[in-house]
Length: 453
Ligand code: UDX
Image 1 (cartoon, rainbow, N blue to C red):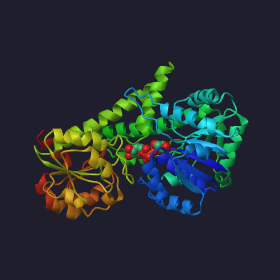
Image 2: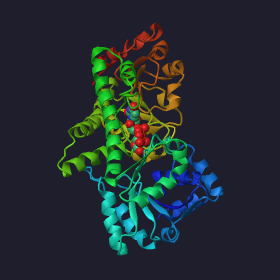
Image 3: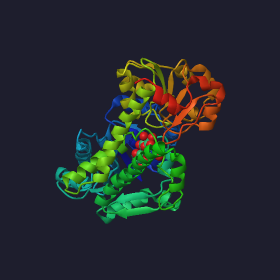
Image 4: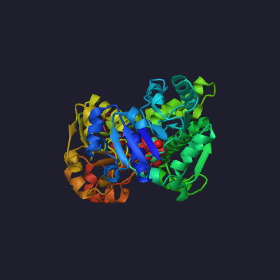
C-alpha cells in the first residue's frame, strides 16, 4: 500500500521504517528541511538501536523516501499516518494543534478513499474531532479518520513494532478498519492479534495501558520504601509478586521514579481528561505526585549521604538505558538539587549529548571510572549495562569514600561488599562492606546515618 507518514520524529521514523519493512511504499515527511536533508542521505537524527540500519536498508530497497512536500506525496496515498508532536502544558492538557493543523492541511490533497490514521498519542475523542475538521476542510465526509496507537519503548522500538503484543485499530467505519487490517496483514499472518474497536476505545487503551504500567512502577517504589524500613529486599518481593501470572513481572523494577516522553505526559493527560469529563482518576493523580516527590526525596537522600561540599559521581543521566533521551529523567530533578546544595557533581552517561545541554555547573567524564575518581559517594541513576559490569574493586580504589547508592538495583550487593564498598540499593537492606574496607565507614546505612546534612 502507499503510505505517507507526517512527522520524522521518534515515532514517525520508527513507524515509517517498520511499515516499509512490511513491504509498503512509505514516504516520511517533515517540515524541517535540515532533518529531511539528513535523512535523504540516510543520516538518522535520533539514537534508537537498529533504526539507522533499517532506514538505510529500506531506502536502498526504494520502499522508503523522505520529503518536505507532504501534499505531493499525499495525492495517491492509501493512508496518512500522523506522528506529529503533542506537547503538554502545566495542567497536563496536551496541545492538539499540530495534529489538527496537519490533518486539515493535508486533507485537500488526499484521494477520496484515503484514511487519516492518528499515531500521535491523543486524548479520547480526538479522532472524531479531527474527522469533523477534515470534513469541513474538504466540504464532504469522504476521508476516514482512524486511531492506531503505538506502544513503542525507546531502545526497543523496532522490536515492539514488528513483534507487538497486539495491534489496536480504532475505526468508526468499515473502510478504515479494512485499510488498517490490510496494512498490518503481514504482522497478523505472524500471529500478532489485531484488535479492532471504535476510535474512542483505541485512544483510551493507549492512555489506560500507560497509566496502569506507571501505576505498577509507582506501587513497587512505595513497596521499596517499606522494604527498606523493614530490612527486606524489594527485588525478592517483586519477583514473588510478578510470578503470579495475573500480575506479571514486568514494570516491577523499583527505581528513581519514571521519566521519558510518555509516562509522565500521558498520566497527566489521562488525569486531566478525567477531571475535565467529571470522571476523576485519583489513583493516577496520586501517582503523578508521588513520582515527582520521589525524585526530590532521593536528591535529599544523596545530599544527606554526602559530606558537605563533597564530590558525588552520578552514573547515568538518560531516563532509562539504551537511549540518549533525558525528557523528565530523574537526573534533571536530582542533579540541580545536588548542585544547589553545594556538592561537586561529576557525571557520566554513554549518550550524554542531550543531558549536556540541560545540566549546568557539573563536570562530565568520558568514562564511568573518570566520574568515580575521588568521589565521596557514587550513585547509579540509569541502568546501562556497562554499570552492571563495573570492575568494583577498581571502583573502590578510585573513590575517596566508599558508599555506592544503587538506585536501579543493578549491582550485586555481595559483589559490591566483597570489593569493600558500602552498598545500598533501593528497597534493600544494606550489606556490610568486606573487612578490608571497613575503615571507610561500616555499612551504608551507618554511613548514611552518620553523614553530615
Ligand atoms: C513507554 C511505554 O512502555 C510504551 O509502551 C509507550 O509507547 C511509551 O512509553 P518508554 O517511555 O520508552 O515507553 O520507556 P519504558 O521502558 O516504558 O520506561 C518508562 C520509565 O519507567 C523509565 O523512566 C523507566 O526507567 C521506568 N521504569 C520502567 C521503572 O522505573 N521500572 C520498571 O520496572 C520499568
